[in-house]
Length: 122
Image 1 (cartoon, rainbow, N blue to C red):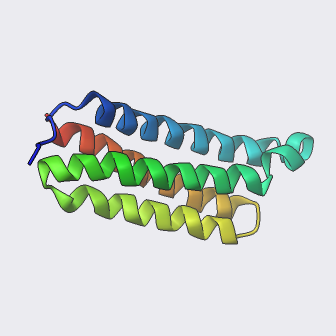
Image 2: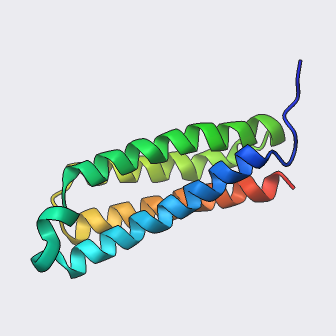
């Protein structure tokens, strides 16, 4: 059986991409709140939210999954799962501060999970 390398460049890239996507998502939420009057239709489009969540789930499953398979520390999955749940819950909320708050807390938890995954692989 092949073992996964400790410092897999692909896994590191996926975790870093997950952190970057989380930052981009949080920035999008803040901009949507601040610029809702000017660009509300574009920034509040459900396509952004659904595509972002789908990408976050994919990066989470693959990136975190590879890391956990290697380092066997399943604790990184708890903040990731909770963060993804909050992000999914935000899709059901009306646009505004509640949706942005749920999403921002969710992406922070998910970014923390990816960061922890990077640290665990050292």
